[in-house]
Image (cartoon, rainbow over all chains, first blue to last red; front, side):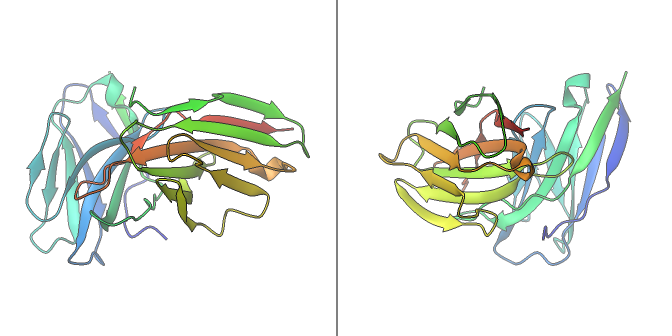
Length: 111
Length: 114
């Protein structure tokens, strides 16, 4: 079973920040938080990952709470192309582990 | 385009037929993964290769399924005696390993079993 809990769906207006929450209350000390997204009819795409510090890259920001039991993915200026299913995953970074996906959050960007 | 390619992109077959899918990973990636995705669900892990060695297989991978990566480069996934329940998107991913271990996914092969 997936180790994360995400809302089933969310809406966000184009141009606004999209904030996608994820709960991972059973995360272990050596597990990272990863985010992937899957645009319709495509394979999943890596977005960002982090251990305990906040992370930012050209796609998104990841905010992890101090107790590491939850996190938020932030898309700062959402566009219609960001409409996708977003998966929050916890896994050991350097292991050989497969990715265990949940059902993710279906994000709709509204024009 | 992630650099991972899969062929064919779509396959329609009749129940009982055998099908084979191919995955070409990013050339320097030594790890290759197969996943299956049904409608409305996240991808489910099937199997994983480190170079040519198949290191892990999910219980989802019944004896009708076989995967190979003979030279540690491309991989094939064969399904024998297909059943309607095999209809799904079959995804391949590759990674370099190490601290990031980010997996790059191909576009998938959509299988429809009639």
